[in-house]
Length: 398
Image (cartoon, rainbow, N blue to C red; front, side, top):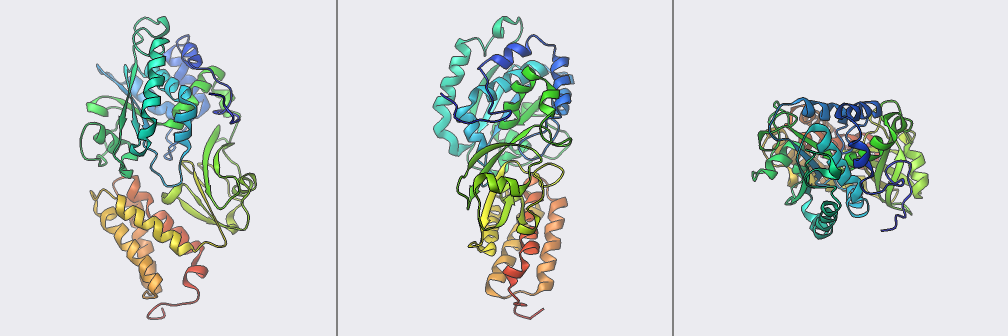
């Protein structure tokens, strides 16, 4: 397939197997060194240092280890991983093979979002071509003892399975619910074995780092957010799509690139992210400021922000696995608060109590779903209160 996209890192030129060939010329320690030098952080949203995760699994003693590619792209407004899997599978799968070589794993699993089942046959065909070219299987590229293969497993549409321990539970045939931590997947992961779980985009960055070096990767972005980021841009703009841009770009600069006009709000990080008003468009997209797993939703002046918020909260009520009380009940209460505002049957005192409930959920919920679901509620009500309340004090006027 001819690549039409151009980018500074991920969307730059790459040939299948190139990163694997370079990796097997290096020691495992050398690869971990380059990852540390790159300061690559997880691109799924959590931002955990990739080198730290790989080092812990590499150091673990076990008869079996696993590499899992988290392709359960369920965050609303995110579609970058789909593009990588369809147009750049060589980067993703080569990244998994390199991870297997580095940590001493022999098995890789792609946990593919259920709604992406239409990709399954083409991805399986691609893996078969890799096997024929000795890029998967036994003694890869003639490297004695380097055995690694990849299988693909489909999810069933549960948003919570984007969380790595819920994903592992699902892979093991259990209900998709987050595990208590510790232990962590790096020592007790899939089938109780040490496991690396990385996002699609994270793995796609690895071959470039192995070939060009960690210091090259670190030249882009900021000191705390190195390299580039894929942004899934949707909403009110002339040119929606997937963009590769360096970390640290301002929101206003991104809006110019995608042709957004009369923008009122930008939802950074999907439904679980924060809603940023026009007065803050000089903020930067970076882990140290406005962090995101990739979703950028743009809303212009025609949008009703209360309707936007209600849509988000309905989503979280539906997707909560119900395991922990803060998330199971908290999201229902937050949605009830939005509906009360719609009807004018609220007091400001009660809405403030709901904001406090949201802040409690952020620290008391068991996994990232309940910890992040109040973000939209809090940020939209605080940043767009004049529009939402419109001078109406509610039923009791206070």
